[in-house]
Image (tube, rainbow, N blue to C red; front, side, top):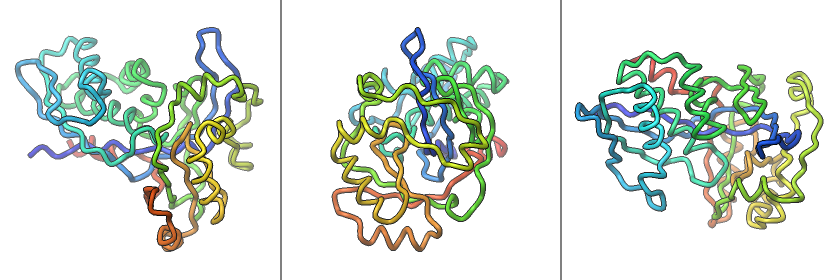
Length: 283
């Protein structure tokens, strides 16, 4: 059996929206931190050139699956004669702001570049991934990063390894958030002043989407309020997931014992390097 390829989740440790561009996209600043909650992608190379999904994903048609789209895009761009059977074991909740679909796509690009022996540079893979989504390049590169632009201008960044940033508790309310709806909301803050990496490390920043998400999605607001009873809880991306940095794994387990039954929770460890890089190095 083919050894699977990991596709890790991410947290946005903050998210500032600086303005809206003429093309309709938004200028952002954020910090991406990987965590060890991972989907698993299985890939078997096909000699006949077909790209095929071998397992259904409820609610996601094959032609909309970012893994399938990534494979087809790379095959077309590279003129690759080979194909692949693709399987995804989902552990990252969908619609939660954890980047699962983008991470799956990035893992497919990196893995197929290796398996098809295309030898594309990482910069070219990241540029191709950007066509699938603004978060895909950071997953392709596999390093915790400071991000600007629409999220594609990346500066490798290792957040301080203080105990509070080693472990995280993530809550997933029983709801999915539409990123498009949040960014189209007339009340969204779009005028945050730019900050420096140094200022972020000193202050932690904020999430400019929080007010809109709280208003449009009361269930997210309730989860955030509940988790805030244990510390400085935050929203990742546009949600629906909220998270709390922990001083210890034991503290996370203690909080989880009090968790309302309708929410899912994940106790995770922060990672500066994506496990995809280690998998790639082992061939």
